[in-house]
Length: 213
Image (cartoon, rainbow, N blue to C red):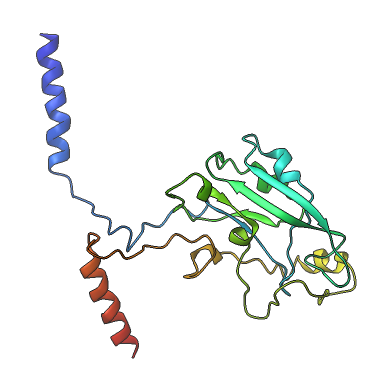
């Protein structure tokens, strides 16, 4: 008797799903929007003049429980300045084959340099490609920013940067979604291969360009 009851319960679950509305996601051409506080790919932010916020202190690497972060600090000079103060990160790497996206690294960062974005497209063809370098993690330059190295533009000392950061943070939030952002996963075209929804995507793109014109 119990087996018969279990069978009907199983069919009940099946039939209840048969009449539900089907939700189709047009991925990868229209990826779903993640939650606002989703822990995704990291970003190394900049100051409003373009200097890096990271000071190479390695606290994020010490806080990481998965040993996924590797940092080597370097010394700033007047001729080669990458961040305010004395030190900067000459090498910065995050191994996403190890990272568990716990967020402890961003809690440990004293300069609010390291933040986590909503970017979740991190799949790669090899494990080596899952090791993101500083060049991939650095936020792109926003309008008004200058590519380091260059002298401090916002004050005479690092204190001017951190006091002024309360009203002018200079963070590049959302930079991970920029079309040509370093480390951004792109859908590549391959001869003879058609992705599902590619034709509809091309039609929408053409219609969008026509509407803007």
